[in-house]
Every structure is written in structure tokens, then in C-alpha cells.
Length: 560
Image (cartoon, rainbow, N blue to C red; front, side):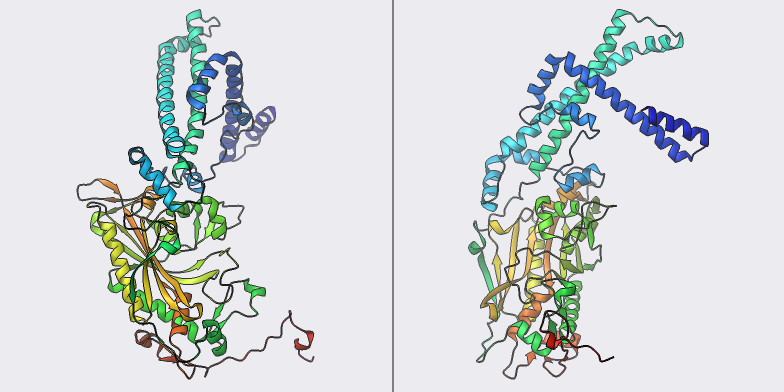
């Protein structure tokens, strides 16, 4: 402290800039205040053991231990940062606290616990009563007690205010016993309030961290179980029958030079690829075709950031503990908790976060073309080919709707499914529509339906799109509201779905449209976008690999 005061005096003497001067003053005052509080709390713990014991048993235990409070204050770091990135965003002023529907939870404890069991049977689950409701109820008790002590302290301050003003003006040294008694009582009340505030913050963090793990309620039509329990709602188009050998998409891509995955990992890493000529044209054609279809359905284009704070991901339902396994983290000294986007769903949700939309604009239907970047840590699955890769182009649908009749989001969800079915039907794909089971819903989805195209070389179906009705799960975390006709603010509902995941669409098109002369026949709806009807070997690019990782006899260098 003496060093800081000396620095402060030196700055005054040398006329330093105002903002540095004020910052030094603030630092001195803050550290002095901390030292004073530390001394008061230490004395309070020593001298008022009965009160401290009462606070420990009535307010802290069994949730919080107050034994380490003094050590934490000494370290000038009274509260450990939350393991939830969303709550760290709340701390930094990015968001309000998540709007946990605590009244609904209290009324439906058994239903919510059972739903949690059905959706995540192999994960560690909390006890709703013990780990969510009990901390919340204790929080209310602490806040009531804290307000009571604050009122008592304010009353004492007001009752002795005139005396202390007179005392300072006349520079008096003696203090009447009753005033001294009130002063000591006021100091004790301040320590009690500080201690309750510390317990409140710790318990608040515990409550929200636990409550954020509760999944959305599940639609009654969702089957219970794992992926195998999913129900096929419908199968569309006939499976194409080939009398000859069907080549895999990578065999076709490498034979025609339109997809390359060999000899690129030195620069791009594993699970990456290049699309060349017809494949790159096909990517753009699929995107333009999809966007045109969505615009006809009332969607508006949006383009957003490819780097987002982790609070947006957790707000959409990706837990902080899983984020680093799924997404690429931005390692920066200036900014913490930023990630490269894995889906534009999160980017669009962030666009709507902390805003209220007028009812007349709902449903607000948005679509976005973006590059999705994912770690795909299950490296043993689909290592060759472009089915499971680190980056891919996708057209995403996202919509915000009202909740006046409790049917709006389900109607919008069915509209999304209809749009997807039309797009894939016109692309002449054979696919099935699957109502996904509880274990496939994750945290946010109320209901989820996947569409899976037939992929001959897998001898099975592969997911090409997914649509989820998230009801108010995301809007309660990200504060996406709407203002209804009566001027009331309510939590909106959100629906999201994949309109076109380009690599998987390319796989389905290349593997299902092969002819006997090894030509790929393209669907009619793409002809206007490609200016051609087939893909063949006529434009094959011949490139000889001359790099390392092969016998030296194959290395080539110019003779200079």
C-alpha cells in the first residue's frame, strides 16, 4: 500500500494524464477497501463465532463451505470462475441470467427427472430436488435475510447520521456508549451482509450450473431409446437399381479428378478435401438451388460471424464440457472462450439474442450459407471420403416464432420438414424420414426428425439433414423475446434445420446416379445452375505427386 501511495504522489508531482491518475486513485482505494474488509471479516470470524456458526448451518451448508472465505479474500479472487461459459458471459455483461422455468420444474419434478433419464441414461445426472430446487430455495432464504440485515443497517446509519455529522464538524473525540454500541453493531451487520453476499454468489453459480444441465421437455410422439429406436415415418422415391458395380463417391471423385483427398494432409490436416471443377460447380449449384427454394418459402438471407463466444453455443444447448471436443477454440491473449462456428444455427441465434421481435414480423424465417468447422473427434469412423469431415458448406434454416397458441413452433417444425422433403424429392434422391429417439435429442430439442439418403457403398442410409423444434429452450438462455399484440414480452420459440449439407448431398448424387458407361447423370432441377447434364472423365486433371512420404526415386526436381 505504501508503494501505491508513493506512486500516486509521484504522478501528481509529474502531471500524469488524467485517466492514469484516476486509475491509480481507484486502485489505491480498492486495495485499501479490500484490506479493511479483510481485517473486519477476520475479526468477525474470531470474535463472533456464534454468529458465524449460525450462518454456516442456516445459510451455507450443505451447499457451500465458508471456511475458505478469508483465504479467497486475501488472494483478491473471492469467486472462482464458473465452469459454464454462459455464466461467465453473464458475469461479463453479455447476457442476463438464463431464465430457468423454476416454477414449472417444482411442479413437475418426477416428469423432468424421468425425461432426463430417458434422454441421457448413461450420463451422470443430478437429482432435481437435491441439486436444483434445494439450492434455489436456499437462495431465496439468503436474499430475504440479506435484505433484512440491509434494512437494519440502513436504519442504524440514519439514526446516528446527525450525531456523526456533528461529531466531525466539531472535531470531537469522545463517543457516547450507545452510539459506539450502534457503530459496532453496524460493523457486524456489514460483515454479516458481506458473508451472505459471498454465499449468495457461490450458491447462485451452483444453482445455474446444475439447472443448465436439464434437457428440454420431450414431445410425446418421440420414441424412447437410442438411435436404433428411431421410427421411420416415411420413405420417399424408389431406390435406383443398378445392374452393374456401383463405385463409391471417392472412387468416382478421384477417377474424374473432381474430389481430392490424397496428398493434401501435410498442409490441411486429416479429414479434409478439395472439390475441383464439376464438384465445386455442383457445390455452388446445390447452394443456389436450395436458396432459391427457401426464398420462395419466405426465408430471408443472413450472413454472420464465423467466430462466436462460447456463451452462444451453450445458449443453443452445447455444454461447456463438450465444446472443446466438438469445436475449434480460438487461442488468444485478448479474448477468451471464442470458437470457430460449427453451424450457422448458433450464429443466427446470436443475431436474435438479447432482442425482442415485434409480433407482426413472426415467424421470422432466416437462412444462411456458411462453412461449418468441426473437430469430429471420433476419428475411427468414416476416415476416407467426405461424409465426416472437418469443414463443409451448409445451408441452414432458422426461425423464431411466437407462443400464443402453443402450436406455432410445431406448425413451423412441420413446415421445415415439408420444405426439406420437397428439396430432396426434386433432387431425385431415395431417402427416409426418421423420428429420432430420446437419446438422440441432446439438450435443446423438443422433437427432432432426420432425413437419411440411401448411399449404396455404405449399403445403408446416411443422414443428410436434421430438423429440431427447440421450443423456448434457446430463447430462455439467450433472451430471444417477442412483443405480442397486447404489448407483453414473452419468450419466443426457435426451430432449426439443415436445408443442404453439401458433401453428403454430393455423396448421394454421385453414388445413386451412375450409368453403365461410368457417367454421372445430374438431376434435372440442377441443370439450369450447371449448364450441363452429366459428369464424366473428359476434363480429368493429370497431376503427378512429387512430394515427400514416398520413395526417393519418385522425387522430382528441375535440372538447374
